[in-house]
Image 1: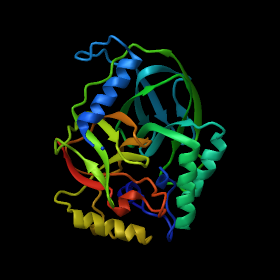
Image 2 (image 1 turned 180 degrees about the horizontal axis):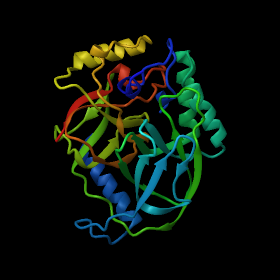
Image 3 (image 1 turned 45 degrees about the horizontal axis):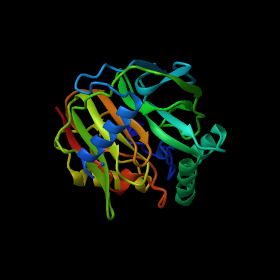
Image 4 (image 1 turned 90 degrees about the vertical axis):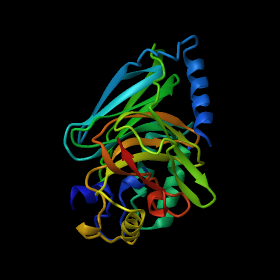
Length: 315
């Protein structure tokens, strides 16, 4: 299996799907909501020149993760990297009352079932067990940052290998208590998860995204979603992506000339319905596929297979 296959979550065998499967409405409205939240978290802040939030480094290892034991409250920025080239993903979650991390991880494993109905149920159970607050998909020498507002409480950092269907993810429990002094970052552009009728997708009001920049992400849908960005072959078309995902849905490994992706995906981890976060990127400019691979809680298939993707340029 090539890196580009893994980046696309190609099933390793048959119809088996990766654990990764578990894992926008106007921009003005979202920006106003984010501004209100920040004002409540740090009253009196001059938003024209916000003081940068303290950056917390998180390193994902194959069998552990390096991260602070405590988090600040308010505006918090995470910078996520991997110690080995293969892609991994960080989830920042807050368990709901009565749920356990063991329950969450068990349902996470069930999203790799052969049965779409079981995958769909597992995705519903995950939603019931935890609130998704962001995270990062990251690979190679790339570092991915994300910023969001945290209140006091207990959180879990989940580190998983999204190409593995059997590996138990390392987890770190962290607490947030003391307020930080950082202001909310000023975004360069906006990405909005959208749902209109039967269509799920992304709005990018500026048309293109800054390759090295900060992107305000709003989930305006009723489902959890991510924002993954993978480089694609120049000239890739929507029809080619649809053909690729159609093969994936059938459990078939497409031949190399039918694989549009040319590298691992990197981007923002899962955020809950109505949630928002800022994605910080420093990626090479070029053509990219933006997608959400989160499992549809009704069908058991990744949303990307059902049209939740967008070809975009990073400039």
